[in-house]
Length: 220
Ligand SMILES: Nc1nc2c(ncn2[C@@H]2O[C@H](COP(=O)(O)OP(=O)(O)OP(=O)(O)O)[C@@H](O)[C@H]2O)c(=O)[nH]1
Ligand SMILES: [Mg+2]
Image (cartoon, rainbow, N blue to C red; front, side):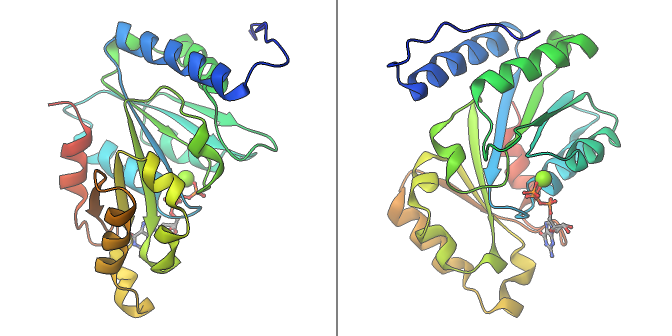
C-alpha cells in the first residue's frame, strides 16, 4: 500500500529522503536488524559479493535482501536461489534507490518474514557511481564497490561516492594484472579523497579478501 507523503513543493527532496531514511533506520533498529547497503559501478560484483557472504555465513546469521535494479529481476532471482527472503525493487527510469522505495521494500519483506528474525539486511543499490550518493536509504553501512578492470581512474573520477562510503571494496583484483591496473594506485587515490574510508581488495574468483570484508560488515 503506498502512503501519501505531504510534501511542500518548495521542500528539498533530499531533506524528505533524509527524514524517510531516518524512519527506515529507526524501524530497523527497533527490530535489531543491521542493514548494509552495497552501491557502486555496474557489474563491479555487488551481487556476487553478497551471494558469497550469504553462502559462507548462512549458518551463523539470518539474512534478507532488498535487490535494487532498474527494471529486471535478475539479481532478485539470484538471491532467491540462496533461499533467503528477498524483495526486488525496480526503480523504473531512476538510477538509484531512495528511502521511500526501501521503506516499501521493508513492508513487503515483512509480509513474508518477521524482521525480528533477521540479523542482516543487504540492500543492493542500482549500479551507478553518481546518483545513489545523495540518497542514503537508512543503512548502517554504505559499502562502495568498484572493480579493477574499470581502470585506475574510476576512483579519482568519482570522488563524491568515495567521500560518502564507509567502506570501499576494490573487487576483481584477479583481473588487475591482465588489465594493467595498479590496485595500489586506486587505494592511494581513495585515501587522498577520504582518509577515513576503509579499503578491502577482493576477488570473488579467488576468494581473496572476502572473509576480512565479511567480518568487518557482519555484527560481532
Ligand atoms: N574475474 C572476476 N569476475 C567477477 C568477480 N566478481 C564478480 N565477477 C563477475 O562479474 C560479473 C558481474 O558481477 P555481478 O555480481 O552481477 O555485479 P553487480 O555489481 O551486482 O552488477 P549490477 O547489479 O548489474 O550492477 C559476473 O559475470 C560475475 O561473475 C571477481 O572478483 N573476479
Ligand atoms: Mg547486481
